[in-house]
Image 1 (cartoon, rainbow, N blue to C red):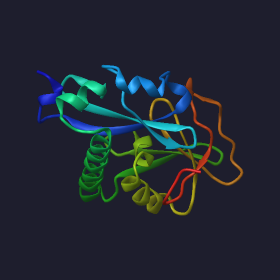
Image 2 (image 1 turned 90 degrees about the horizontal axis):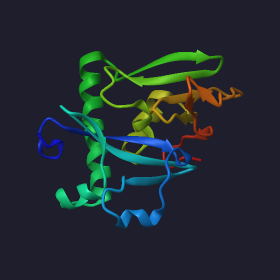
Image 3 (image 1 turned 30 degrees about the horizontal axis):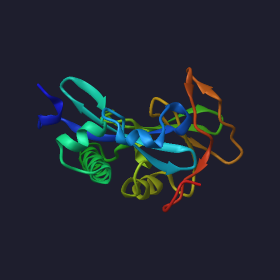
Image 4 (image 1 turned 60 degrees about the horizontal axis):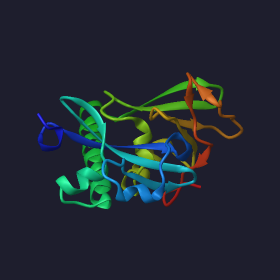
Length: 178
């Protein structure tokens, strides 16, 4: 079964430190090139699809087969993630869980893990509800595997977390990553 044609697939976003991948902006014109959207502050987001055959990164080939744009896929993934968060909140009372990793460092996760929590900062539609849950204007970091870390004032970020590279600490606001 081709996951691009299955109704059992879902889209999600995965922000990565810009240094976690090697691509050139001109690669967008090459077939099979992964789709990356610059978020600013040294982060990009990829668009991923999860289905019965696993998870895969969407590429320029998907733009042709789906007759869409990168912006359209980015928005579709964000809307799918919002709907998932809504279902989780209706079922569990909240869609997110938090656990303390170290002094002043918490990890935020999505209940039942339908997508990596770092995706919560990958689109403006997702940032606002994430800020409401995290309260205030937190400093955050994402890891190459999609973990979302929240740092209290004065907390330092480990360079490596279980062999997973962390992005620099960023300030999350309702309009941008700073």
